[in-house]
Length: 183
Image (tube, rainbow, N blue to C red; front, side, top):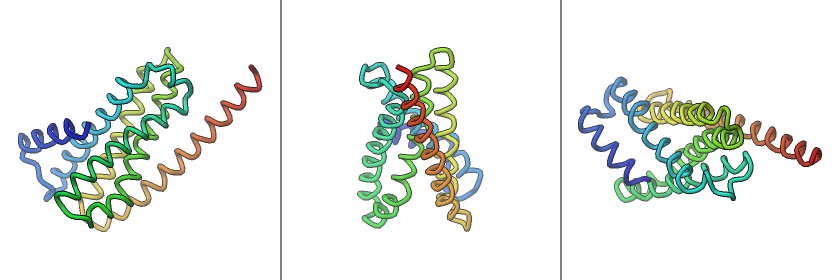
């Protein structure tokens, strides 16, 4: 999914003549191009290859499979960045961007997992997960590309997402134990 994402991003950046110089351009690039394309393609990978599988049999699987897709995406993306910008870019991205992709995937995956087992709210939960992942990814990219004092807020964003995911994992575990004791 990295190649279709890169192609779509390159075409849209050229069409809209965007750069990373002005805040409006960075905003459009982050929230309306990069984050939606990348998060939607990660969703497509999970939806196409695993969502309907018998192996996807609990809410936690939504997180596991979406994080896996996100880490695969981040790995391929990092290889491209290292080839273009050098090993320093790869090292920096390993500590910020890779965890970011994993956390955006976990956020989306939580809602995909809930959607799989709630046919009544399936579409709503999937859309909510994708939109939240896009917002967090867009904010991450916006802060990173702004190259300002606010860029350090990336660490705060990743920390908040980590705490939220940990909380959701605990809730899933409690729910699973409760189901096991009632069966």
